[in-house]
Length: 624
Image 1 (cartoon, rainbow, N blue to C red):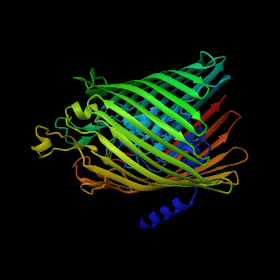
Image 2: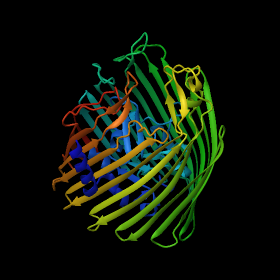
Image 3: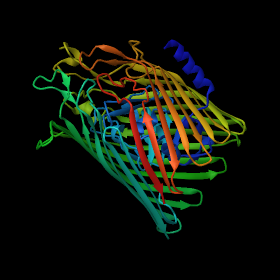
Image 4: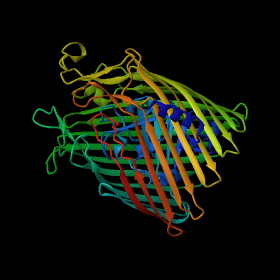
């Protein structure tokens, strides 16, 4: 494989790339500053996946789609529905902030307070923005690692429009998705829903039974103009998932095996906001709610769950956007957030009040500097200041230079503090990151290449500590383990991306990520973070509209802990190849099909959990 690694690195450095090529496309980005800004003004690394990208790749899981972005590592416990973590630039998955239509959806009842991407599917998603690196100033403490912003379809301003998608596949997989949108006068609405059912492989790596995910979901947005300057904005998201999992066999629960366990997950997300626009001054006042209930049962038919975790986050927020004069803009916000967690025995709560301000200045047309400062006043940990700054300089019509510094602050989760495994003397995590980047276009933007170098340091990172055989110190009276702070961790690396369009019919895309992530005290590599990752896509379109595509994803070796012995193990590298095709049947109906993991590569993302072999999927989609 050594020869292949050199080829992979060379390919990533010279070949055209994927969605990251969109890093230099004209676009409006919200995730970088918390307010709309053109890409040319942003000095941070932001990747965008559009509705066209999602349809072209035919990917069902959002986590699998994010894996094509350099600097992003995905781990999932087994098949569809299994817990999936999104790690950005070596950060923990719990340090990634997830937003759905601007609503924070991280789960305060989960161990690290993170978001589980395992049940998040691409149905009725119009756009995904990924900010790589800490961005706590506009988004708060959960953004210590990075931000993933999911956007559902916005209402159309006139007439009825809609889409529908039906698919079948391996594992008796079934998928149905639909969305309708209409606007009449001052009122506009978009409503959608979806159904997914798949049982493909066992969650346990060596199991025989087939586990999977069954889910129905709904989404909606309503906009109403109350006057020429004031509008109402309502958003909602609902998902009910049944995830089949495997565990440890009774009565001693020491051996992993097939089990009949399953988890029911109910997610309810809501947003109600008032927008005001007066010339160059824009206001937004909103209330948001994210409620996630996870109930795990030993077997179907059980009257009560084996254990449960219910988390809720309620927020009140104000955002202001004021263009003070040409070349000077201020973005500011005030927020109050209350979180609670219930584990079936006790309810735990906390709250934080925050404020931030950002100044976006352009002293000359080619230069944009954004500086920001945030103050968090946490109920337990008091006040904490977080700074940020990023710069974008258009050095030439085809060359853009970027530089960014970002900080992050994250208080321990309610689970880490107060659960059976909790440690009430934990210190908050803090992170500091810097990056330098360049975006270069050739041949009138037909070829676009991007490169970024970053270094990230996290202090007091919180990890679970196994107390097996230990009875003193932090393990006193904690035979099953507890949480503790690491002194510091560091991650640094290089991200390359490129995109080329050849003769308007062939597009070639590639991304490459190189990462070194270590514990600064012990020098040990952080687990589940491969040093090398490569993604490449090629798509060809005929004059008839027929499309043919291929994808390649290579993930290098990574460290992990054996699921049974708790000894260190190495997860081997893996090369996955996929093929896809689509063809128009009428002006509004299209047929499509894909093969994933064409060569049935055997691999693990997490030690002890299964991954799918070769799968086949086919479907129809329509627009009206």
